[in-house]
Length: 405
Image 1 (cartoon, rainbow, N blue to C red):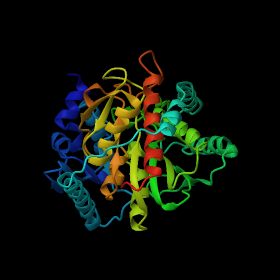
Image 2 (image 1 turned 30 degrees about the horizontal axis):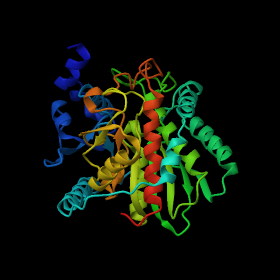
Image 3 (image 1 turned 30 degrees about the vertical axis):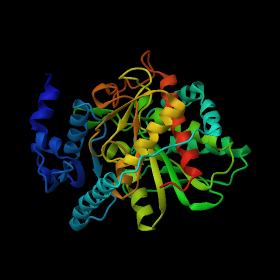
Image 4 (image 1 turned 90 degrees about the vertical axis):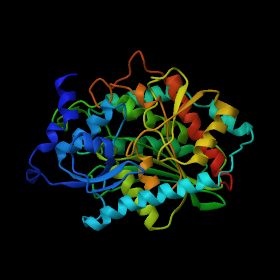
């Protein structure tokens, strides 16, 4: 065990004087909080999620410890929420309510059965691995960093917005493209809406985070340092873009399809947390949320895809199984990711149904992420990544034209 691992697991960094830093509230895996000796203010033992107030160094310790345990992410920042501590307790309570709702759905379980749809199959066949490769290389090579607090934190966001506007010039569908400002980060999220024909107020969400990060011993590397993030998460971002390309050429769906490239995920789901909370407060009817975060590294084997079981929805996991039976013919392996693993957690906490397929399983995670070595390499597979764009296309077409919820 090297020195860094020993320090992390012993919680040595957690004893730095808190008064030197502004603390922020987070929801995180309670086991990791205890390992790092970070005080837990409130805990849900059934969910194994704790509420803590942490300094910047402890924030990095949580993220690093999560990766050492074969996980990604590791926490949700409540930075964009009210500074009132009562609201932080309510955040953990809302997570319990969402989990109870999911438990009730297990009790009332009705198996999801899909019928083969030739239009969906044809649309999936249009996914082009070469397009994914081009987008990943564009994001990784054209922007030195996509870190949410870099000097040009929105350069890649505006560039992707321009690319999308050009791509949609020939579409016959009604669409909207906009950036979304946040309170918790200077970086903006990017949102595209393909407006539904019959039920425009019913929304299907496809999303992935656009930011990247490189971590050092004492936190993120210099804000302008190299942070390619090819797998985490240029890959998922490319998957969503390819799905948008294909869906924008198809018939208008009955429900609205929204595409998100979130800001600040690596700093605690910042962009998605604000967006999901805003949607909940305005009573937006979000039917289902798909999160794509890392798809390029087939760590468990080519065409072996993880199906995240915790803080996701049973009916959507079953729908993925059905889509696999009808169209994909891959191997799905269920695994637990831990809380705050990616942006789906933000939506789940607000009571929305979520799904997060993953490139592998947690014990076969890409160990290059959050380093300068997260680049396309010999072990990368764009054919493997293409599966996730197919999932996104099928997810949107199946749910966008049904009454299922």
